[in-house]
Amino acid sequence: MNPFVSFIIRTAVALPSSILFWLLSFAGFDQTFLISSLIAIAGGGIVYGITGAYLKNRFLKRHGLTYKEYKYIKKNLDDANTKIKRLQKALFTIKHIRSLKQRIELLRMTKNIQRLTRREPRRFYQAEKFYFSHLDSVLELSERYAFLSSQSKANRELEFSLRDTQETLEDLTKVVEKDLYEVLSNDINHLNFEIDVAKNSIKKYKELPDESRRLK
Image (tube, rainbow, N blue to C red; front, side, top):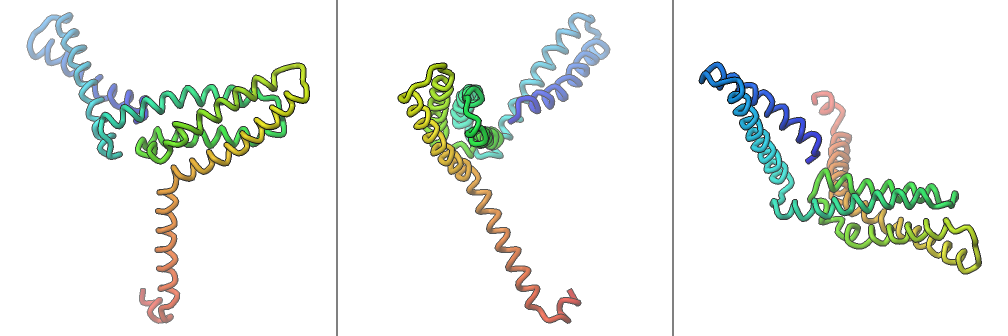
């Protein structure tokens, strides 16, 4: 679940609860201002925690995950987030204008996989190859390429290494594209099914006699 949205919801529930606790303690039970304030803070904190637990439980149920599974996925997503930041820095450090479009596309697909998986954690299982292999390869090659391209003195061996790295990055871009397709595969299959149903309905409608169409 989006941490910011969770914070807003929890605060929106906890703040009025704190005010209610304060009013009940101060006016209803004739407590001092200080004690009423402490009760309000404690009560609001408890409500904030309970609301958070409820939101998390509902989120996990909606996505069919256990807490243990979600914790495992979240850890890997957090690790990936750090790697993607490093990847972005490396890709835009590379001094090779002709490959700029390809590098932007690579970063876009990488971020899309991360965004989709954060929004729907169960997609992680469709992107395990990306998270456990392909992302690391892309990051390692990009940082290596950025380092080599920053060297002022070029020679044939360095140029060959740069060219080889660039070609490998291009191949990995295609691999990441397949990873993104795999993450979206269920959505694509569902869309194709809906299209087939719609086409079938249109076909049946067109086959109806004109009089039957007017009645409908």
